[in-house]
Amino acid sequence: MSGEAPGSSRKELSPFARTLVPPLAAGVIRLLRAGVRLRCHGREVVEDFAARGQRYIHVFWHAHLLLMVYSYVGPRLVFMISRHRDGEMIARTVERFGYVPARGSSSRGGAAALRGMLRHLDEGSDIGFTPDGPRGPARKVQPGCVIAARLGRVPIVPVAVGYDRAWRLDSWDRFMIPRPGSRGLMAYGQPLVVAPGEDLVVAGQRVEQALNRLEAFAAEHAADPGVGRPL
Image (cartoon, one colour):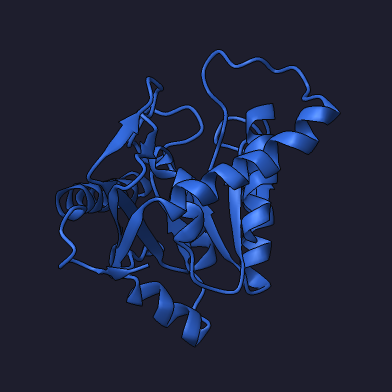
């Protein structure tokens, strides 16, 4: 979950914005969720991890961010979020859904944030990334999640969501907003393990391919109530 976009201003947010925007954004997300008939497919993977206390890395494309606050199962999720002011708004919003932000990105403070996330992993939290954020290119995996999987010795679980009717913003990632009354499918993939000696580029390509396959599956079956179970 990273909120930095090309050309964004780096001015500090006003105290008024810090106070007002996050609860309003969280309220909008809850309203959108209430208006979508959302189902899940393959969620048993993370439910089993939670039951066994198996830590893992939760990843999804930046374009899917909006309702992904409902995708996590487990004790606590620490998510890397940009240090930019847009990231601050996202961080303050997702905290209202129980997530813990680790501030940084591939371009700003990423190494320090990654070290902090690995500490959280050691302490019993799961960690998460939008691996194409905060600036893209869209649907191209940056190395952070793969490095974390190798260093933390935990699997990566890819997640994607699709809707039968959604708005697409004119943004770098074509951000998705489900239309009221739409059907949606949240699809979870099989865990991906990064071996100690595996090339990071190759591992990233595997994650990328898995996310793209899940995205296509979720979009194809979003309107079919026979696929998945209610979420």
